[in-house]
Figure 1 (tube, helix red, strand yellow):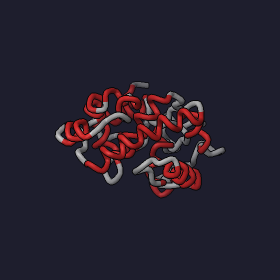
Figure 2 (figure 1 turned 120 degrees about the vertical axis):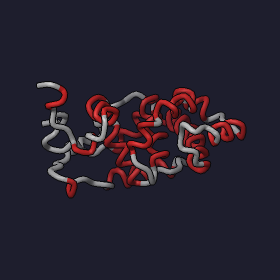
Figure 3 (figure 1 turned 135 degrees about the vertical axis):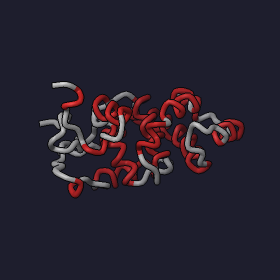
Length: 188
């Protein structure tokens, strides 16, 4: 079967960038703290926007935030905020930029407290990881686990981490499998 014959979740059929993201990354379990930090920051920038918008700007975000190096981002001050606000390659929202900087510090504190961010964040993974998704009416925006994750992240000081953002994060890093039932990536 060729790549063009693969049946995918319909949301990713917009373009090759989306298809590649779907095929290679979305829903794949990640336990790498650097990758988890990148997704957390990208998800906070996505709030109110489409994921496709963020994905198209992902490489620009990587450059602007120094490869999502949490140690460096946590140290950003006014000069870096101004640099980011003038960067046309990213989402230039001051509240989200400030949240990314704050979240980097919270990420590092959580790593220190838990031994890894992975250990903390995966404590919210649901027991039932594979969801039945027959059509768009089955797609969830939040779950009790994403509610709990959001509450815990906010308690740790994180910003822009509402339950919908947390659920999108859970989907992206493979805490849940929300591929449509017909999709070749769906776990059986």
